[in-house]
Length: 276
Image (cartoon, rainbow, N blue to C red; front, top):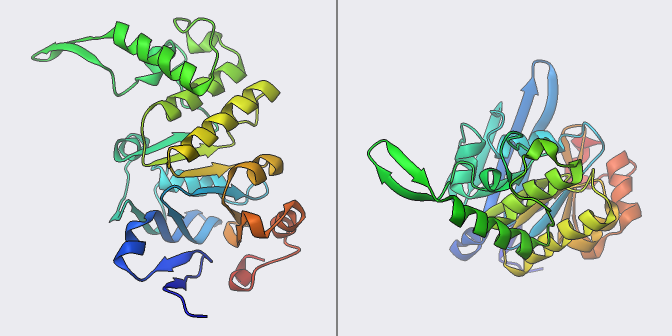
């Protein structure tokens, strides 16, 4: 069948025109991470388009979080390429990734326990009231108001935003991390198991944030074990098994049983035989 697109080894579409190239926000080529003799990630070819929401699924130890850590600069890759927003990148750390436009909610949350909610939301991007040489005064009033606006926008309820993070429940801490990610316009949002420790109400809040990002046209990578959540929220599902991508599935062309079959190795797409 005639097509202006060519399929690459990842099963995602590889562009062959300038228009298609401009539509890709993230691409990885042969992305690999070895810890000594342990091959945690091997040859991951992945493409994400602007406005697309993609779920990454797989069993524990399948390579999902390792993949995210390479993209965000938490760890340095053994080999491979990362192309973000049309340019090859090699982030030295998460701050560089964030400055480039990648907002991430990690499983470890990456919050400063001794600080309050506004300080955490604006950590590293504080609003400065005035600056004189090496000295500066922060605009705490503006940061508190923008924090309240952000929490209202995302539906996150925190009774006292001036309280320190260490005094909050696990669910509240997770919601603060997610609100921080959704507060600032980004080129790409990554959520690594964002609802794993949340109750029903808090999970619904997170899912509403994801839908808000979709409506705004912001691309998202969602790492999740929650099949219902994945089938409700994303456009495409990429399955990892034993450190390799083993399936690339359009949501409307698959179902939960099919995805589980790829996760367990009962099924493998022909282009991914090595991952079986």
